[in-house]
Image 1 (tube, rainbow, N blue to C red):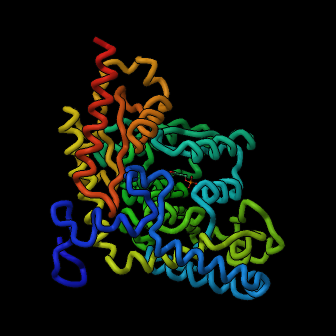
Image 2: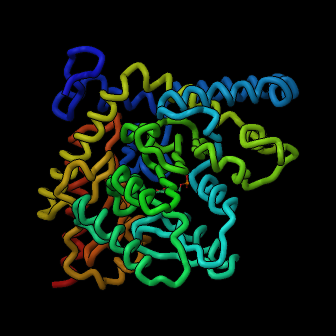
Length: 416
Ligand SMILES: Cc1ncc(COP(=O)(O)O)c(C=O)c1O
């Protein structure tokens, strides 16, 4: 693979180019710490922190000038930059704090009627599931329909499972209708890149509104909303794009914008989608503004270079760790991996009390090894999710594989 703009080869784990350990000093990590879990909370380079501080200082120098005069124009500029980045009309974007807020914004704005059903994949994120559950609990005869998904599955098997659920529901002929579907682009645990285009097209062909949970998408995979054409889409910029925590972009297709209102109603209620989301009450807006710094930081490398490096590092890193552990990665299909890879932890006895909750392993990893990778059970096995990022190299995955081998061997020795 070469850079889209010239003929220089893109960075790979074997030839990291500008990436790898030489970038560590551009981030805020202490010397003795390696971040293997970028996916949960993200982090940002010092250059973005500087940009964030600059916006913060601009606010504090003269709060009235900022809040009353400059803020809205600056947020519009950010929406324009994101719109260009993900190929959508910036007027269809609202900047919100995070995916949880974005999901609440849509689900709690739409008017659900008796007989409405909300479809979800079982791999959906808990807060998304709970928000949909809340909608069901607060509306008469609105219910969840879950599509069971257990990996490994091919894209076709996922699409077939969703189609079967839709067709089975239609066959009931009970007067209910699937009104909205929540579709993960990249699920959290297990982390899998879903066939989001096929799912969106399929669901729309059945007259179902599609809300794509792209919490992990911007900065991890190329995003083209013009091509995907969902009804609603949310993405965290503070995960993979490198902006400061508390920055996300919510897309709402034009015909639905008059139905959607922020989770906190302000004096701009009734003034239209744009106005309602440009002012969400007195707040610190610098994290949203730091999206500018994040986009500028990424530009020096180019999106193709970042995505090629991190994706291939996840693939090779996952295989390397699986080899050390004598196990396997969850999916044999590399395109189902973004930057996060799930490696099976070959524990002999999953009923060992130490594995009953993630707490024991989390504390052991943090206290003894000074690192963290989340663990989870799926399809009768235990996995850990490891995140590739531009500041990591393959040697980090070797070290992590050996840490996990030590832990697995120690716990397995108790089962002998
Ligand atoms: C798939 C998915 N959806 C939603 C969320 C919630 O994101 P946030 O905590 O930023 O609101 C996450 C968080 O990791 C996620 O992985």
